[in-house]
Length: 376
Image 1 (cartoon, rainbow, N blue to C red):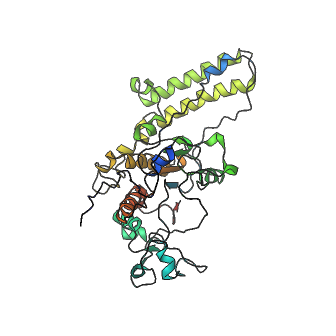
Image 2: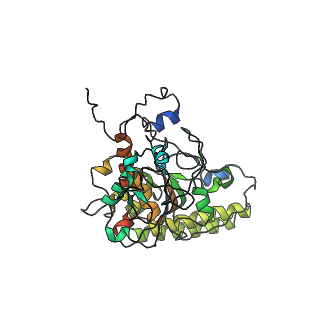
Image 3: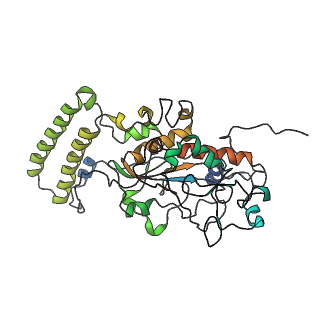
């Protein structure tokens, strides 16, 4: 008898019942690849290259975020085994309207671990988990019992296809339509896709004007408020005063140029927004997750320094910082390698536990601002 050598939880999966990975989605689902991307946009001054007055109506608005409940999507590429062995599903009566032993067997639970057996259900988070759930163990390890008692949850089912990223399950645009918005950006995601993750967004909900900004590291987060060298040469107050003076000089110049009013307003608003950005975020460290002691740096932080060296935790911390802080209205965290039906339970358990560790946010360390949190 031979013993399989244990692998690192983040190691790519070699799935014997699958063909060799050949597409980007194949590599992402099995953990061989993580999402990267580049977004390019024209500058405001570049618009002056065309003198024609084609500017559309533009509304200048510098305002705070919507201040709604933080919403974070955990997009587990490949298809994590959530129902049954993690979060319980049941009949028409709800989670505790138990299925038959045969039904739970199809969800990966042997008869001895069926939820209707004593000690197999945990409801600490306001949601019925299987007591042996790796999701549950991960969340328990990062939260206090008093906090867990104030958390609520729910589960709903959706139909999907296997082994595809085309399932339209990502709700980010719908959350934005419900009013979610941030101080810096409406939506963020760790993948450079229309949804910000691996799963697709419902076509009817998509709004190109709020397409998620890719954020997968601390440098991506601080890059949202990069004000150049002005703040380093002056202090933040002085830099704001310089920007305000530039805004006023620009207004005088624009008044003397025969240009489309909408285009003039666009340029003027660019100066206004830059001044506001410097005044409120002149120090990019305010959005740096690596400097937030709720996230890392103390014995009670969510992540240890060693954990934050891993890519899966780096991108989680970046999105967490922006969404929980109100800098983004909602965010998607894509994690790869969840196509884990490789003949063992251990590989899936390891990934489930790591997902739960990454899902715990700084607010779980403190009395929650809200009675319940939405988790997708």
